[in-house]
Image 1 (spheres, rainbow, N blue to C red):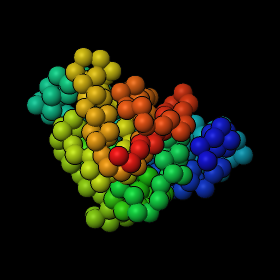
Image 2: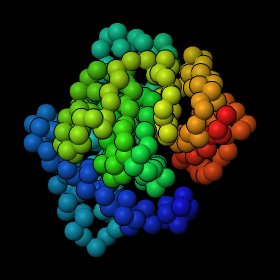
Image 3: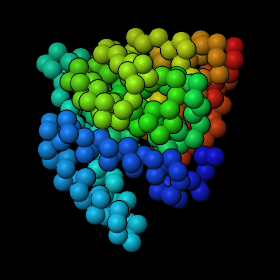
Length: 245
């Protein structure tokens, strides 16, 4: 299902249409509007564009709304900022919408998804919203980002038992029980950052399960065991299937 046809018709597939609705629900939520009043400008712009006959205008307005929501709450405390810098971390790099749609196509309702370096959790929450599954585990260093993510979760009406928030170091997370690892280049691919990708690859190889890996701006693939098969790749992300050991 992960084909160029899906990419070419991204804004017409059901999953993408559901994603549009989820973004708008967050943007018009009273708590979100109260905390971030400028979001209303992008929500209004999107609604106007949606009602036109210009698909390019609609797409641009939706992307602007997505990027605006993705950046909310991007602050780090002094200690968090130092830890991020020491680890060669990347601040708030937007993951785009196509990988979310692609992930929703390969998800099933009994799966557990983990996002390492989740930011405010927008990508994992959108995936949980458009393709409900057992649990989403959001791992993020910034407590401020997690606070905003919980606001988004309430706006989308996602039950508390569907999302687990972990404020901590992504390099130390246990991957046991994870069916889909969603990872968008949380650290720079050199120095300390390369060590993270090596650790994650080793932990994935040790799992006794057929875990799927969706690596956006892929820095992980070169470290994966050769038994992990590349099932799809484009300029945005790569998708791998791991073996049962």
